[in-house]
Length: 333
Image (cartoon, rainbow, N blue to C red; front, top):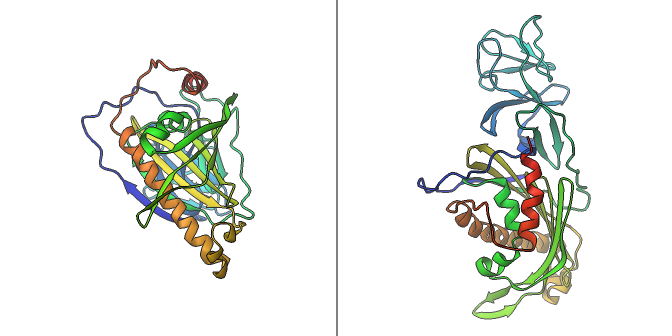
């Protein structure tokens, strides 16, 4: 995966959101970060964790501090076969946090999944319960190699997903035109879906013209994983933007944007002139433009998120109220 990381300047006077940590699946990092035998310190939901990959390839996540005398397992800890060795006294722990030396307390283990190139852990709040739902693994066949951009923001996952169903802001903030719902918001247990289309006005060499309609198919699995499938039917273009938002500490979140595009499209539909160029060249050019445009649009939201306060009582109907009711389930602990 190609990578880019940014930490945006944050206004210190902003009041930290009053939203608690939500339950569900949240990304700790990319699978490619964690090679065989590698150990990494991570932070999520205000907790320090350590993730490691055993020599057989199994990924595990434990609370970071050794239950013996408190050494941080992510700083100096080493993988020994299928175990993680503490750097302080060389005590070893397996994937379930059980110490190899009898009668010593176990380290808390976390449920882990590797999905769509990401390492996810399940947060259940103070109640230690097993995951009650799963995140689907998308097929990568026929899609480009993912491009990843990382951001550290003063925001909350609920704000990020809410932004995707707030259709009216897309016209006001981003300048989208002719917004139309294709399918109204639908919720089913941990899953939310909504579809709409719009068009933009493009400025090319001083000439302004309407772009063709783009269709957004938005699906959220919990509050930590938002998939935005973008299609431009007239060109046969299809792309995916996955947003993994993981709270690190109160008010702050790591946001990982993963982009991939369908390799099959007809470049001649865009312009007959493009037909003279190799398909690989045109696809790289178009997808680079799409990523740049999406990030530019997303950064317009960043400015709002990092300087807004959460309003718990909203006077609105339609998708926002329905979304808030759906989101409430992730705080029932």
